[in-house]
Length: 460
Image (cartoon, rainbow, N blue to C red; front, side, top):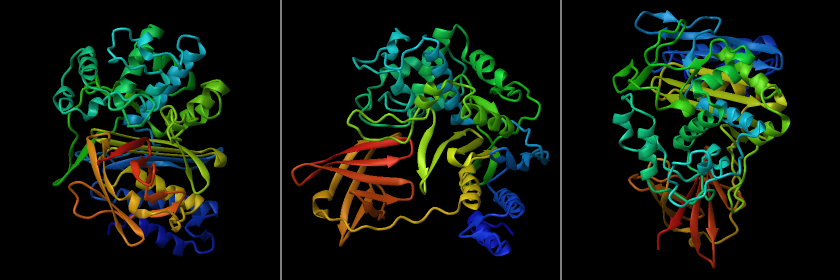
């Protein structure tokens, strides 16, 4: 029988009644057993091929190993020593950001300089984009992975200038620093900047200045053709079940998503990055401190890393998704807790589900948001709002049902009813909404989703 992870946590709570309080396991032996059981349940899902996991608290490795299959066709399991390497997708971005900060330390880059100072041929269409705005998805540059043409481009081996030309031709989505939309184009450009000022290829720079000094011997720039011992094979989800992953030329994910690694190496990376062995204290602070938008709106994404709050506990995190692979990494500074989950399949059951299950077993569940009565006039918020998002322009209809607001994206028959949690903020899951009200009329709806701050203007 396949047991959903959520159900598993309830079963574990009964199994470890002497050490469990509200889903949190205190006894180390019981905790290790519960973590192992959660991982085993995760790979029982029909859309999960395999995972490698690592859970480390301080100097204590609570769990590190592989579950499921690294190769479904041969029935080869993931190694118990968790030495299988995976494509880590957008977890690559933190390595790119660290490389940029190293070059800042060397005086070769200035975070406040217009990035075209380094890529002098790039046409920014009259916009001034400080280098730091490439690192936190606030540049306004169009993301290439959202362009229809990228599907055909992604399987071709062409000069990188091909993609740069496509990005240049697209209008900016917003004025730099005024909104936030997750953006792979920015990290592509950051890779080119690293090459320009260092005199090395991106692959060479990361290998020489990040991987080698830390002894990350199983980490490398991914290849669609090279044979690597211990590499897990990737699988994509489909209506018919898992299938071999779609082809992708690694010319294109580049500095935003083309690194491969193991959970063991990623633990080493986290311990050294957050332990002060990769960057100076000032550079690390900049790397992990989100800079507000120009109007003061706070962000929850710094430089290649998300920085948020989980029930009052600070968490620094990033996930990744690429053909055939998903990844999740979480670091809780106050707990000295690192959780890494690498998965060689895509689909509805991602590594974040298992990472959340691990976190809940160790830190306890996140309390449900508490509803707070809204003291203002809901009627002034009702209306139609339109604005750019990562993939398209979103048309959001906001209506009212008594004391509740209903948010309905165009094309959906049923709207969502988030809870007002105070200070004019409504929340449902990981999405929050707030309004800019002028003269008793809302003029803008802001949506907060992880590394995105969407601004939707009211449609008169």
